[in-house]
Length: 197
Image (tube, rainbow, N blue to C red; front, top):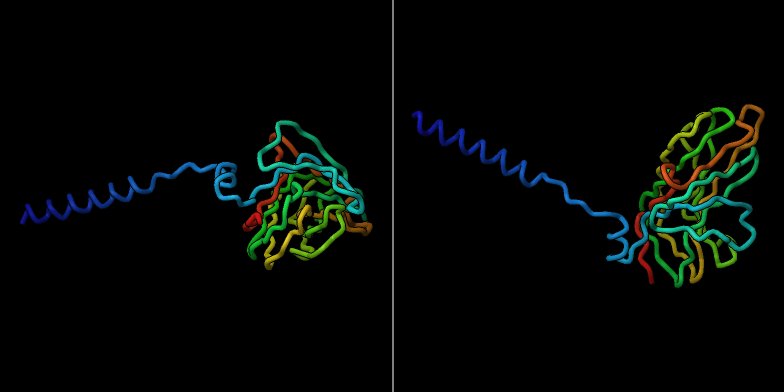
């Protein structure tokens, strides 16, 4: 009877040890995954600018920036964030986009976020995600994460993915927001999947 009990106990311990040994996480970096798969998932903004009517001058990257900076978005105006330019057309899968935004406001409030595709001159071609409100942005610099669902979309050859940040009007709204980028305050977005053509 005792030997049967010992066998059951040993078996249970071995099962637990097996679970522990297989639960060890595997380290895979986004940059390495992107380079190997040809997929675009994390875009780190090196600057923020506006308006969107001129050719985007921002060359953002798929790896974090070592510099830092900030951009002011006044009430009733829009800031524009562009992906790197696509050398050829690309298909974007439907899914959830994640915008990792570092920002502060003159007072607490929200901004409106849209995700679009543009041609090589920054002219909007299609809407990936309609405007959604951010969580509340406080008066001190903070990280705000926004998740947006979208359908599939296509980026034209030499086009861009554009994220717009609009500061709503109204006397009860903050008079301005500051968007931060760079080391320690990496404003970036993650696409569901972009298969480069």
